[in-house]
Image (cartoon, rainbow, N blue to C red; front, side):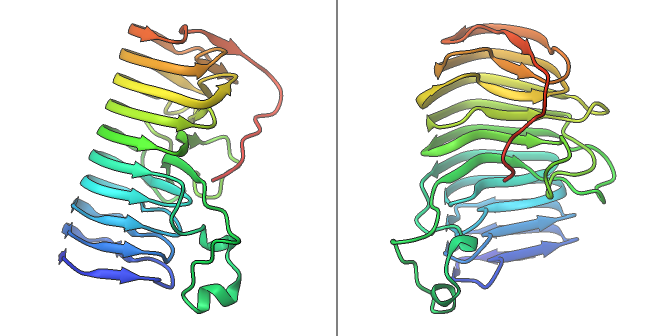
Length: 278
């Protein structure tokens, strides 16, 4: 399946929904407004290149994909830049910026949606997360081998939102084995990241040559549980005052080199895990 060089404006739901397909090539698409930009489910060998997406919901979404590459795209949304899961996911050379040009569609009045309007006097426009994990109870095994590299991210609330605590509709079933962030910059973050995996597939996360800065100081860099290991080969943090991880379960194995702006400290905590769903 090859899709190239067309535009979609104000789609009633997805700009593109692809299910159980293989060898999918999407390039040079322009998407404005609507809900999700591009969605892929149970697909093999997906390539997305040079797309320009300003959506009213997630820019690129889907789960249970294998061998999926998204590169050289401009992405803007009032929800998540990526809401994605799978195996062999590669995200490269992305320019991701918030807040959203189009308000989140669920915060629009019905008459504005029906008329294809984008009024500036109402609707939520902050970009919630760069990477929100997406999992389903129907997914047969954990996601893994996910890598984000050479991306420039600004005006986004969270670096990452992985919440398998059981409170999220779109994060059920198996978790995420491992994810890597490499040669990345995140400017103007607002909230700590969330890395709450399952006990059956605890998370391994790697940072290599990554720079993070917050608009206002936050009390910790990450909130989470069931993190197996953290590997750092260059991570510069500005604006996180507290521990690296406030953990509800377990202390990850640490392998940290060239960590600046924060100490690698894990603070065990009890009580309810309260994080707003995305």
